[in-house]
Each structure stands twice: as C-alpha cells, then as structure tokens.
Image (cartoon, rainbow, N blue to C red; front, side, top):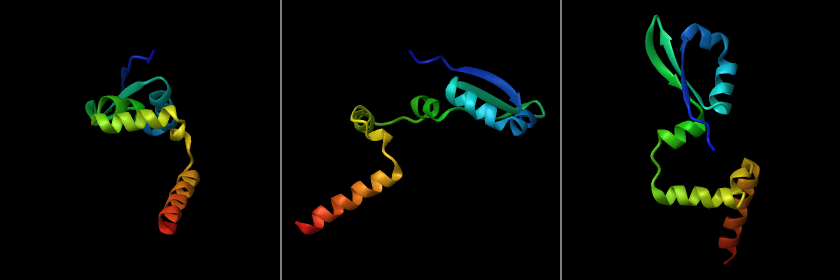
Amino acid sequence: MPKKSVTKLIDALSVRTRLGEVMEEAEKENTRFLVSRRGKPKVVILGVEDYLKNIVKKNELLAEIQLGAQKAGLDKMTAREIDSEIRSSRREKKNK
C-alpha cells in the first residue's frame, strides 16, 4: 500500500544545507516540502513518482502503455539498451 504523502514546512536555508536529505526523504518517504523564504511559501519539493501520480494528468492510453512496459520489465532498460533496440528496429525496416 502506497504511503500517504505528508507535507513538511522548511525554510530555504535549510533546503540549501540539506538538499540531499530533503531529496531522499521526498523520494523514499513520499514527503512533500513546502519551502519558504522569509516566512512566505515559495516552492514545493516532491518526489517524481508523487509528481507523476498526482500532478501530471496522463491520458488513459499513455498510462496503459506504461503499465504494460512495467509488467514486461521494459521500464528497467538502460539508455544503451534502448538505443540498441532502436538501431536494431531501424536496420530491420531498412532491409525490408
């Protein structure tokens, strides 16, 4: 079961000095950080999965394609493997 996101208030100076920790917590603990400067909220830091799941609205076809790729294990391909697949496919089309 996915963790419910929690929002923490943090000042900009703390983010500058602890950016690595903030990023790790945002990613692994699903924490959102509301960053303030001089007491005024300025930006929000959240993990990519949280962003994609809750902020970006995907159309159904794209979501279905991504789910299929995950089930087939294709979401774990490296950039080099992807490039190799593209070159191979292009060679096959060229030779037809």
